[in-house]
Image 1 (tube, rainbow, N blue to C red):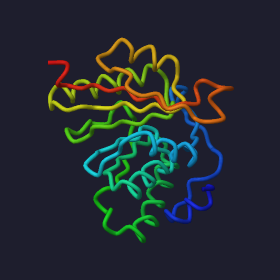
Image 2 (image 1 turned 45 degrees about the vertical axis):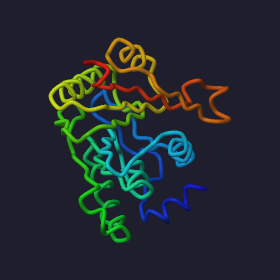
Image 3 (image 1 turned 90 degrees about the vertical axis):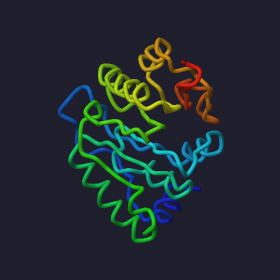
Length: 205
């Protein structure tokens, strides 16, 4: 399916290139996950209605709306850029015109990723290479503290992963459980994949 099909289906506008840039060098430019990648992800990864997914660096919210629409998950988008946060909230308003039952399942916060307070219900965390390794380390640390306080299995989902991210996770309790290669792209660019790291608290105790 093409981009226009999904934008119309979800009643949102998440297309277009970034027109503005972040003040901090720790945060990368906005680029939405393509719908073709989201299609591949939902075929090879198990989302459940009871999942609470956090999208760090959510931009205009594309992943959030897609996952809520197809899996009825609760999704929280974290966006530090005021402009993109407003775009996400505008999209939320339009999305809810067709998805009224999702009012309490789609949320966006305008804050720095490392300042987000991980909720006990949050169990899956998505990253499309949104910021520097320094910020990533702080966010993973927050997730580990939350999992230790409220025991549960937690997944880290990386699309187009930074090698720094991978190296760091290999030195944490998270274990690589799935590598989803993006067809036609992976052969030319090995970063064109989705990596899923899991912390199964039961195996850690």
